[in-house]
Length: 291
Image (cartoon, rainbow, N blue to C red):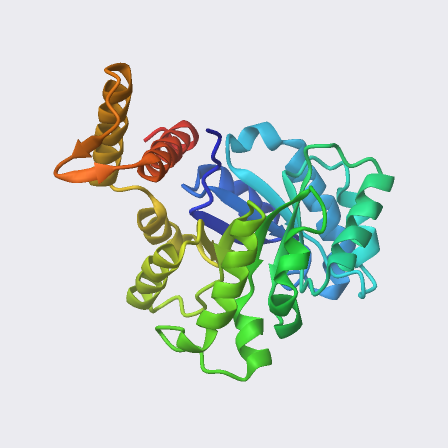
């Protein structure tokens, strides 16, 4: 089972080479090199060059995932971003404000026309009401689509809803996107937490995100990394139980037994699959970060 950890994925301005350099030493699973919101209009072309230089040193980032968020195709920079990043060496291209499968296919056509390798994935931001309502068709738009990223700040603005600690006004949107992602076999990341002084609230949002099924959280500052990693990592107890389930299941199958009970609980195929995923995630985290 191949799993890529995405517990913590940090946005970094595309025009800031020092920040991108610092990412090599951060305990982050992924970095989004941002050509969109975090890059001023007069810095867009400069940021492309900065990101390309960072991607040229891809090996120095170890197993961290490097993703480039481009500008939308309806902006003056979107087409140029896709052309510039098609063969730059990113793991994925993140498309902002996706609202239809057609938008995804148009972007991928540009990437492929300019030499995008087969392994280049496409991620889609869902941050508008229309995007949420079309999540299922977006998820199935193309085999390159690998991940959804929730844009909860823009979504709250568009819905005219309160961004409350429990995020109750957003649960319908989060749930619809979760269903669409999982039905298509995609990863899905939770949105950002903007209040950098509210670490208690951030930790609560991470815990809620994991309970809802998200693979991890997008971040706006390195100080948020540790809490996200804790929340979305299997605990020592979860890892131990996963091993116990797999060992019991393996022994039962070898002995020709059809029923497996661990700590008084019946173990079925679904529990084994969940245990295998837990161990695969734990091992993948260890490979990237050595812990």
